[in-house]
Image 1: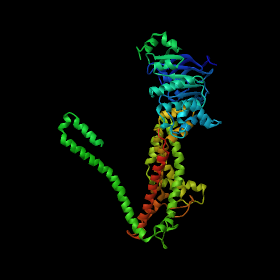
Image 2: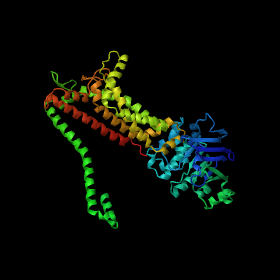
Image 3: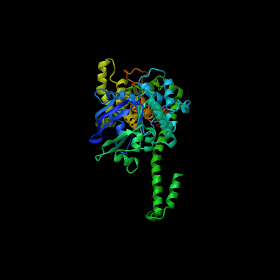
Image 4: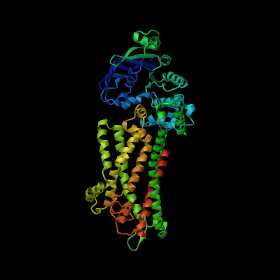
Length: 256
Length: 314
């Protein structure tokens, strides 16, 4: 159902202890598109991203109010198992974090813990192909993942994430530790993955947001440092005609 | 090489207040260097001294008793007539107690480490960690009487035929004794595993237990093995607890309900007795001591090898 929405955020507020990190965020994420979240450092972009797969649950003192509806179901409703959510909403991190295991075992990890019944080798191969890494590693499958370059490691982490067929992939500044060539490869990959998955990417790099995303959310923080979404809309519009002064200041480089 | 570079760097600095101290500072740094080197040397010299004294006295023993007889004989009776110098009963006693201790300490120790590093909230960890350290600080003689006066009578209710001095009770209590060693070193190794690896696993839908068993423990394996090896070496070398609780009957058995004697307990027994120095009987101490030394040495070498072989680098 392209064009429909997959996630709907309604009145989301989030606290770390007494500190409010996110305030009153409401928006809908379109299915099979790339949505970018941009904004200055410390505005809560990553915190916001981690609300989509309940990663913030792992931080003691983190608290959420409001709703995040994933295919209509509130992932913060009582009784919802966060591990179930995380197997459907994958994540790629800022620094490549492959496990200190073989390339094969890295990709197979999620399949194994989720009790995959099919042919493991085939599933690993197809994930590596879709992550545009197969040709580079097909003869090294049982070598340590840490022997790969940073860009290859990040594509391995993408292969690891898509192996369990999530509906959504969250990417938290996935290129910030990579060189420009590796960055371009990941961006190409994001565009092709958007055919099958919904991608939400946090990025510091406005050019990157403009290049890869269909929709962009601009976040900033209020005086008490709580993060808010200022403007949200099609990427081309947001960059060409920002409606809010704060968005304009940010994308023209006057702020942040 | 590095030192030379540093000195060259110092020389290139413009003369400042430090230059006034010139000669003295040079002397001081030399002095400190040799002082620290001396301290480091002390431990090496001690090890060498122990090896030399063990070897020289053990040689006296092996001139009269063949190494073959010593290592393969199954009867140990150095002071009784007829004399017999087969060390295997002592080795069996040591291994029996060590295996029982390991069977207790490894699972409980590693489970404790997993609990502390992956599950426990800060508040709980702050209570449990110091308690474990207290456990590690209790003198072994106390553990010995704990085994003898509390655990053995309890076990006798289950096994009525068991003697009050027995391998099982000594082994179980030794297991308790080395739990802190296993758990504390293992936990340090697990805490050193980067948070990003755990997050990677959580993000794939792993539960806490899956993260612990499939990511943290494998990544910390080298440290965990090091903890096991250290704890086992400690168990093999432990003296007071087994002298008090395990008995003084060298016996070729692997039945934990029997009274046995370990290598260390034998050394204590003989050295406290009235055996004249320099006699063949007395020199058995050094032969047994040398074997004990070699056993722990092999364990440590094995440990290093295993750690290198299985290490998951991150």
